[in-house]
Image (cartoon, rainbow, N blue to C red; front, side):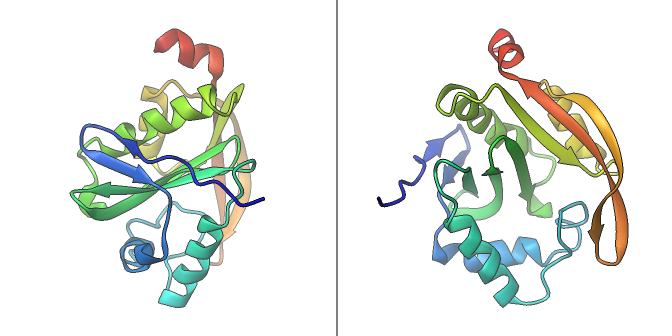
Length: 176
């Protein structure tokens, strides 16, 4: 059976769409940026081949396993958001796009799809505790802390901790 791609989602300012091979340069511009990748689960990409492999994995996500989106603003790739694997959510944006509310704008329809289309009971996130911007965003979206793990990720020769967060379907429904 052929994989079905998630639908294109349109917000006031953003287009959220399935990844395509043409996204390579735009993604590499983000994933090779030390600021954008400071709290991600891999170090910044040193080569476009690393990003090409990462993009191929993103494009190969099976619909029953996850749903990830490219974030576009004014026709330019500015990030990615979605579920690499249900129910865990993740996102990143190019630093040039920070501070404009784009992450929250992108996350709302993705969370809505997670709860209404995929019938997830809970959506989770794993955030580096130093990433206060992401922690604040997730709290604004209704996520609550569920735990703290020390030395949960080994990235770039360094052990990093994680703050675990979750958003329950019933809480999302009550808030929306």
